[in-house]
Image (cartoon, rainbow, N blue to C red; front, side, top):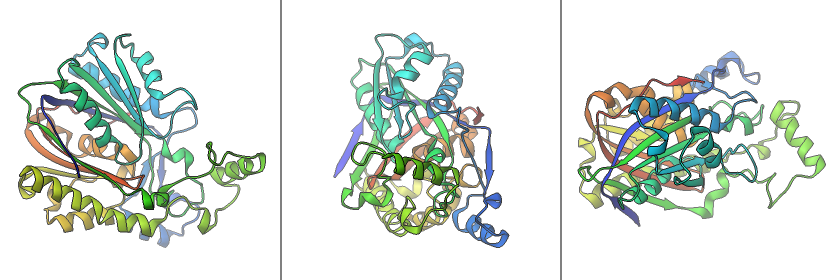
Length: 353
């Protein structure tokens, strides 16, 4: 089991930015009014913020980060490490972390780390950043996490399109010898990983002229997709989602001696509301401690945990000392759970790009 206890690290703030365009699930062309209501009831998603072609994940993360730095009063030259987590890079051969390093005006001495990861990405990124900060040489770090995942969803994919929205987030981390340790538990089940894989278009299965045209037609809605072409094996993902995450959260609490019932906030990756509810019931936690951002934002992949913190309980985090356990799960198939304590953490309102 991959258990980590990382001392000397404090989370100072979290911010989130979403694109201005809103897509209503009631307006999707492949649903009748009755079908749309059933989907909304089952998923918990009424609408999502969708990036137009001119907006990238790095744009959203940059806006979120600028706002957070201003609120914290941190100067660009005080940042020792920047880490970016995304599946939707601006370029093929130029990681987004370099785009963000330049736009933020960070120092040449600032370490840059880029992670390609899916839904557990914020927790995985936080564990990586915290591990480096805890050593003491790096005093301040930024974790930027987000995707414009809607831009790779097929227009007529009945299973995926109603779920996914876009978001960029920023998390500020600082060396702090008085901070309670950040606790992690992570795992991977790669045998079943293809349940969430998009196989065509990269170097294992590069596009041909015909397959590229076919892909563009599916993305734009010029051609409907078959059941076999849908990008998510829903049943496999559901089975994984209601099993691995609650087990991981329980194991973390047992290993580190934490009382799950005494933790203030239980943040579950916003896959869909039915799955969130199922996991909460397995954990036997009160739903008042399990906030959800699904109705307004949908599943924003690895950004769902920080987005939910900011959008649903940001004021509480700013005003109180809170304990939090959060679990991200999905791509891989993999999962990652974190426990942290915060006090008066800066959480600006969600920014509209």
